[in-house]
Length: 285
Ligand SMILES: Nc1ncnc2c1ncn2[C@@H]1O[C@H](COP(=O)(O)OP(=O)(O)OP(=O)(O)O)[C@@H](O)[C@H]1O
Ligand SMILES: [Mg+2]
Image (cartoon, rainbow, N blue to C red; front, side, top):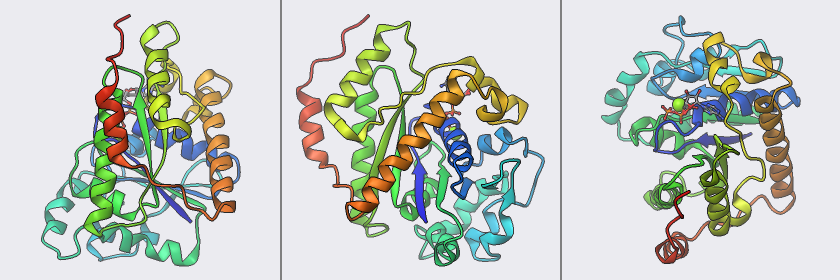
């Protein structure tokens, strides 16, 4: 079982869209996948049309009151399972902040799934704010998958995230956390900036950037309002094609990593910072 935190402290970059549609595309390939909505906004939850469900979130499992296995719901997709968020989840931050092991509550909650190898992949849709829920997500994950919107300042945001990964490792909360990959989202082929940003991020992060780039398409943004993922909403459109390609690349990378001893070398933040300090700003289109 591999746990992937889909995270970026910047809001609106495509975390939820990537979590929902990558999870669906992995399940379509026959991978047993669990998607956990860690964001009290519950956007992933409404993407499945489940916003009416109360008392079904991670709130009690995080407090150690019930097992996460009692909160896992099936979805319309055969191999995709889901733990929704509800408003209670917002309150859990205050509750667990008092606990001595407050950073590793989620890691402990997921241990039962790890022991059973119930799932191939567990995807965590993290909230944008750097609070206890996101920190728990990073402390429970094997790797972080970072969606980055193709826009100005993408690289600056990435440097901050790389530092955050270092901080989590150094805190002792999770020494195995890796930067699993960077996914460029909302690529608009009509603008010069989109290609410039992709080129620039690739220059600094090389193979960590997925070859698959997610295009900007209205179909992806409207799918949640129908309570559907893109594979159901527009199965043959460019959004579904992109997330299917992302899932294939994800599996290829993970199978290759498993055969090469599993370890992806860590990013050295100081090297990235030096590179970004010396770079020229992106030219205005
Ligand atoms: N490829 C895309 N094409 C068009 N719209 C997109 C695309 N990806 C995401 N969006 C839209 O952009 C908005 C932000 O996306 P999303 O909710 O996935 O970001 P997020 O990082 O999860 O946001 P938050 O930080 O609030 O959790 C949403 O309205 C979503 O539908
Ligand atoms: Mg989100």
